[in-house]
Image (cartoon, rainbow, N blue to C red; front, side, top):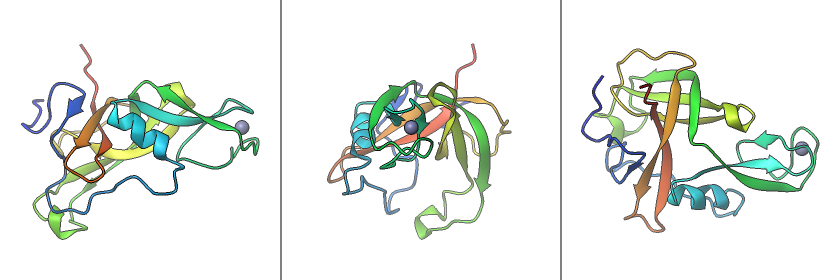
Length: 161
Ligand SMILES: [Zn+2]
């Protein structure tokens, strides 16, 4: 499989995966997920971890669902995971995606972070066969022209050589 031109061989890209014009997500103002967005700007993946029971949590929470402890920390984890589930989107849900379909949404499980699962886009050829359990790695998609700048964490199949 060859990567499309908009996918670089490194883990870092300044090129948007989604077409221009689509309303972009940006960091929330409540501060709860600020460490995640800040880390992504630096090409790092962080998830919460409980100081009471050491379990990982995702998405960002105020309290641990396992032990109800409010004392949570942010931990950098390896930006690699495996596909837990996926969906190929054929119908655009926004006018900016009219020429962007199909694309693949993946639910990525992070084995080194207690198997927490993150939703993201799978980069690469969207009609290629997708295997549950396939190894993936994060791609940090920087939107440096946004105000404030932000980074989306996307995913691509991991190198297997
Ligand atoms: Zn806990």
